[in-house]
Amino acid sequence: MRTEASILENLKYQNFHFLMKMMAKEKNGKDKILVLKEVRKSFGALVAVNDVNLSVKKGQLVMLIGPNGSGKTTLLNVITGTYKPDKGKILFNGTDITGWEPYKICRLGLVKTYQIPQPFMNLTVLENLLVVCHGHPGTSFLKACFKGKWVKKEEETVEKAFKILKTINLDHMWDKKSSELSGGQMKLLETARALMSGAKMILMDEPAAGIFPSLIDSIFSYFIKLKKEFGITFLIIEHRLEKVLPYVDYVYAMFEGKVISEGLAHEVLNDPKVIESYLGG
Ligand SMILES: Nc1ncnc2c1ncn2[C@@H]1O[C@H](COP(=O)(O)OP(=O)(O)OP(=O)(O)O)[C@@H](O)[C@H]1O
Ligand SMILES: [Mg+2]
Image (cartoon, rainbow, N blue to C red; front, side, top):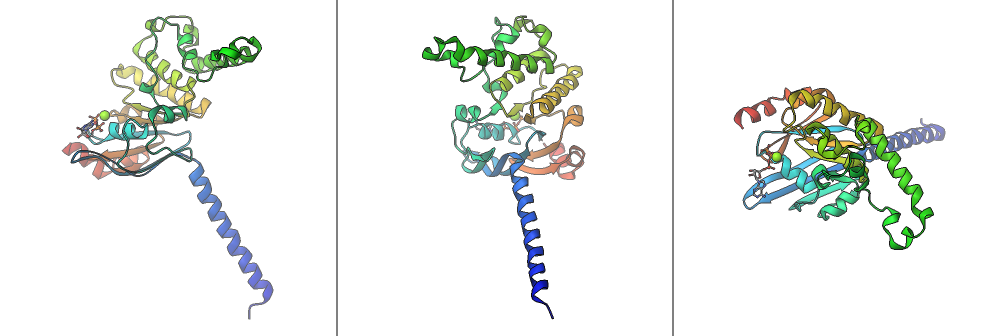
């Protein structure tokens, strides 16, 4: 016969497990910076993004692959607000950003690199980082009259810029005109500018396109350094997955608007559905 004490003990045990389950669920939700639920975008009769579910964990580098026309760019454009989804939900850092204007999404820290204006070729590398900073108190007419109000912020901004430049090995070029940078360095400068603008998550559409194959490795290793040192999350569309395999935490594969596979890079690359999509596409 069960005693009162044993029933109580059992209840405590059940509560404990319930609590642990709830905490794990909470943690799982919290470590996701981007969550897409059943997101759809059509162009007339063509469903370019077809009820996509996808999530990205904070601090990861996630790759989006798929043959031409599978909906990758459209999906990125829906996430950043360029296109409004027909249905579904997009959550960034727990905030429902579905249907928001691109500038508001960008301000929240979800940035597609092209949203950052192209580098000013006549400005130096450092100046290019300083001009993208939001909310500098010196830009307010009243505060500008009181040096004490903005000088500290200015020092911190320059310090942050140098920290970023050092991470991507461009600090020695801080006073060079950005027109003197190579294509690969320009890509890194673009990423640095996104970071300076307050990005927490950076989206890129084929960043290695037009870059010498031998430089792709080095660019991605700098992305990894930025990821580690600044806790930045990346969602990157890339065709040449085999080139960037060592840098990838997780992969989503799309085909005809749908996510057809997800997982670790080698799992997705060896998924027969993915292989078939490329052969048929
Ligand atoms: N603005 C648009 N109007 C009409 N159709 C569009 C538009 N943008 C994309 N599409 C169509 O939506 C589908 C998905 O295109 P999308 O550019 O998203 O694919 P993708 O996976 O980025 O391809 P790629 O690898 O070639 O860049 C394609 O059939 C494309 O023609
Ligand atoms: Mg595309």
